Length: 130
Image (tube, rainbow, N blue to C red; front, top):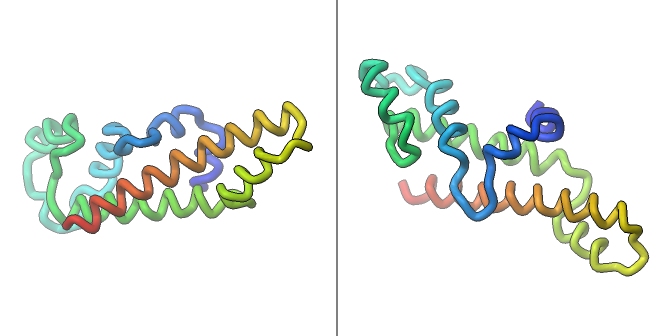
């Protein structure tokens, strides 16, 4: 399902950005999705809504742990859905017997994989800093 959303929803791709944290919209959506699941999200919705506008502001530690776990699962699903590894695509792109159309497709796929990889590194760094 994650790969279907990634492939056919350009706006979903915009939620993940290379060399930057995931979009605050994605983090806010996941924080809302997991409200109450951690058991300690007892703040009023009004207080929580102001926190959602700031990507560095957490609702609770339990909620944030669920958000990070969901991000890892999403990024693993996207990464695992590709039939080739990033390094294989880069090698293929470097070869001289690749047509122009294939070269353009490879560049696009490589850029997607770099975005996923950099977001995974960010999420894992945040998770390990806890």
